[in-house]
Amino acid sequence: MIPLSWYLVLSALLFSIGLFGVLARRNAVAILLGIELMLNAVNINLASFWRYGNPAQMGGQVFAIVVFAVAAAEVAVGLALIISIYRRRKTVLAEEIDLMKW
Amino acid sequence: MTAYNSTMILAILPEILLLVLGVLVLLFDVVWKGEKRRALGWLTAGGTALISIVTLLIGRPGEPQSVFGGMLRFDWLGFAFKQIFLLGAIATALFMMDIEKLSRRGQAYALLLTATLGMSLMASAADLVMLYLAIETTSIPLYVLAGFLLDDDRSAEAGFKYLLFGAMTSAVLLYGFSLLYGFTGTTSLTSFVGSLPLALGLVFLIVVGLGFKISAVPFHFWAPDTYEGSPTPVAGFLSTASKAAGFAVLLRLFLTAFPQFVEQWAAVLAVLATVTMTVGNLLALAQKNIKRLLAYSSIAHAGYILIGVVAASKLGVASVIFYLIAYLLTNLAAFGIAAAFGRAAGSDEIASYAGLSRRSPGLAFAMLVAFLSLAGMPPFGGFIAKVLVFTAAVETGWVWLAVVGVVNSIIGLYYYLTVLKVVYLYRMEGENEEQYPIPLTRPYALALTTLSIAILVIGVLFAPWFDSASLAALNLF
Image: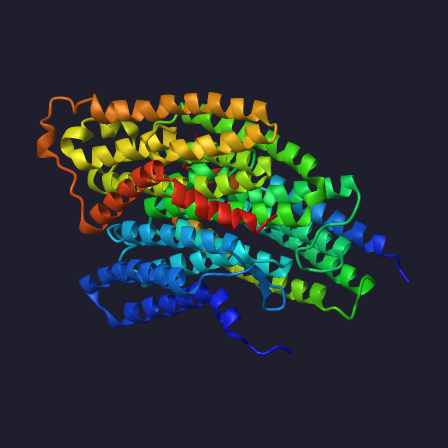
């Protein structure tokens, strides 16, 4: 059987790629994609901890399902906000959405 | 399987009633037409006040107990925080009533109530799944509220920035939760067993997520932009109730999950508190816009409150709760004044406040009360709150942190007084100010009068409030 640590490494890699995407990408939609990657890394963690821990206890699976549902809601609101900005400003580049700065 | 019993219903009584009220608001939004819709604000504020009273009368917890299979804790800590959130929602609903494009939309009030519901669950959640769900139930309606004014570029931008920061930090927080679940083997909040480096790693991940909620430096970048762009009452709600909810989770999570590593995480939070206070106050000095000034001031206040968390003692927790009550009253009043003034004068620039003491003596006086309380002057609530957190720090040996806090309070005093100088000493050039009165509508007058009196009362008669806060604090030890 594949050891648990492999899954954790995979999840850590996915999380790091997602975080890099959030911090480095300029396109707002791509930033949202990065956040999705981070959330999926969490789901890999949850599923593997559940499988290798105590499969009789459903906590990890329930947690993963809740994460799915919430992520979907978050993306829906995020895309709606991006569309509302795009309609008025014709841009989805994060650096051009800069009416307010210190 | 245990059947439902009355304790379970009592434990989520405010949440049930908030949901009912939210549905009622949406219902009347359809039924009422035109100008009548303004009454939706009265319905929201009055209904929330009623919920608060009902909860105070029949929803009081006894001995702390777990309900719903350990998902929630029914205790005084959660109860105290729920009252704080309800108070914040009442004042915010009143302030929203005269903002164009917000007041006649039932959705805005429904979103406000949903966010309050999420916060209530945050304060009593005792399970990682429940906690995450509650945090998101709070955040998502707030993203929408911040970006609610679709035809205002700055509001949409505020919502967008809030969402990106919020989603990213909550993903980091969630990664921390998933590891916490993995190493404890259960989703319920129990004491973490493991090595120190591992615990510190988890603490860092969790601090990122909650640091965003309480707008601690270096996770504060969203706050000034979001406060400036979002509708002013919403900004007030974000800076008070949302921050209080973050602190509720911070207290429960760290004191329940990592009690054996208290020295280490307290050190991490002490550094965070120092940086937050200093950066917040120094950046506030340079602000020209009242909402940005209040944003940086709210960042600095997050630092002061963190001092109480660092103390991690009974007095520390009690001082955090007391500080949050005083801060909620004060900052809501400050944002309410900014909303009332911005609505009448069409500007949020500090310079445009010149001559306010002649244009509207009442509003200027409310501002004096609120800003002196923010600065920590007796006899207002902010003074007692600061004394309590600094006492808690000194009592547990964090003397240097208390000194940093005091020095920062002095820096803070400077910019609060600068605003008051503009209000009281400067005149509108070449104009007779009395010809430009600031009209105060009834909801504003009611909310601002109540908040100003409350700030004074909590500063003079602080013992009953402090006793309640101490009672709540006992539940964590």
